Image 1 (spheres, rainbow, N blue to C red):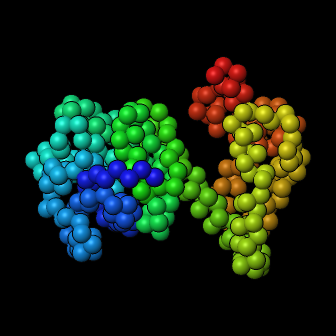
Image 2: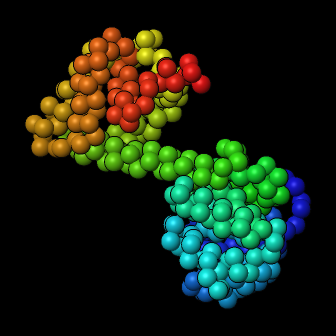
Image 3: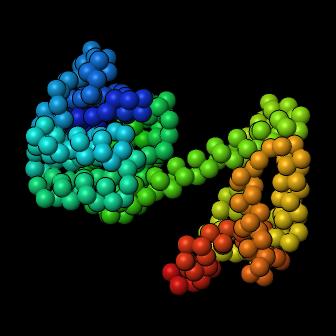
Length: 308
């Protein structure tokens, strides 16, 4: 890690934001902190940080401003106005936005900075507060290459890996939303699976233990690649007309008999039926994912790969 020492203002000291600020401070950067509830700044001040009374004051003394806030409105509120970040930011300074916000808002924030000669780097992340405090987040970074390099000493303070997506900051916002979509769907799927298991009288500790093992199985990354490339003719597990559709039918039948609704299971069944109607029954059962592409008005995955 580079030893360049920068003045960094961290705005937003919730659980993740506080962890990021801890890592930045531990790396030896000069830390300025601001939070709407000032008591959250006290431990940092006790460790040598400077507390600011407003986003404007925090930005005025910083080479880099890093925000970890709730969403579009929260970032906009801290960015604009007479006491906002933009009012205090020096020309050429950089704003690292780590918040989960919309791509549209990200483009707006980047344009506001460009209009006054400062820079916006979108750097969303995946991870938990403990990982933030340990410097182990994964960061999804999008912005100009030279701005990324200027920020690298700070980014590397709280991340284990930087994934550079390109120059358009909105890409980082989109990437984070994709990651969070998968996380949200997994939570719902796990919830449905466990209530199904409970309805069958299974030991939930045993079920969760096996599921943890299965999610490390090498088939999962192979399925991801199959879906990305549209390589459904090569059957990895089951054909759509075979075990795949039969098992989903049995799952829903058994759950219904136990009075357990499985909304995700019903969605999968409907996608299987639609895929079979397209004549894909002898393809790998992951071909059901092509229906999502068609529903979105997209070409099939293999055609996308051929024309890329």
